[in-house]
Image (tube, rainbow, N blue to C red):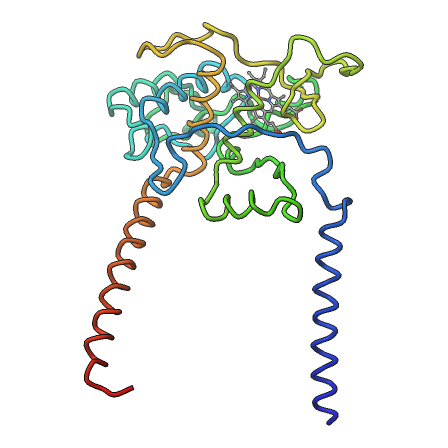
Length: 291
Ligand code: HEC
């Protein structure tokens, strides 16, 4: 009897705890605050058959190198990564050329001195500042964050609360929506306004941005139409620059994305065929057995 009672108690308390959790979550204080609606973009790397558009990654690198690299490092990348399969796939000669334009600090030499030499494909991307203090000093206190993992480090708050609009969440789960970071980065780069909306005072040294949480960011608008010359005829607009550099950041954050998606799809097809075979053999085996 006491056993049954304690079992019942256990059940009741578990149920109680679960209910409490759900209500706590569903209460408005847990809701996403002033989440900005981040529009979703079309990306070649979304979905089960996602892949990187190599030409886009090459353009994206160009944008990073010519604009963003003045302030932001990408410390996880080596120049050689730029020619590896699944990435921008620059030719080896081009990567050698790109790397050779970088000034790498090396050493110490036989006299114990550090020295600079031109880069090779085996070198890491050269960082714009030797350390965060130097970056902060140069940027008036704001440190430009490293961009290697940025596409994974940011995701917009879901614009739809799961307890009022569960449909949106389920679609995202089923379709495997993983482009939140990319959508946010695109919105950030295209989110500068010439004038902040009436009634908003932007603090000195900050800039109004539609997508940035709080809307005031220490990064000045980095792009402008026609800023960078594209070699492949793609239109030179802020929208295209932003899209391309975002794709590049996505690749940097997940260089094996293509491999992962291909493997996933193969496994799903394999399991599908396997399931059919299992079903057929089950039927064949049990056919003569009365059941
Ligand atoms: C003049 C220097 C400068 C340039 C050029 C620049 N940035 Fe920034 N960036 C910053 C600073 C400073 C911050 C930190 C802003 C803050 O925390 O308010 C920042 C922040 C960011 C963030 C983080 C935003 C967040 O959600 O926290 C991203 C992403 C970013 N920059 C991307 C880029 C890209 C992509 C480019 C090139 C197209 C670029 N930046 C060019 C200075 C720069």
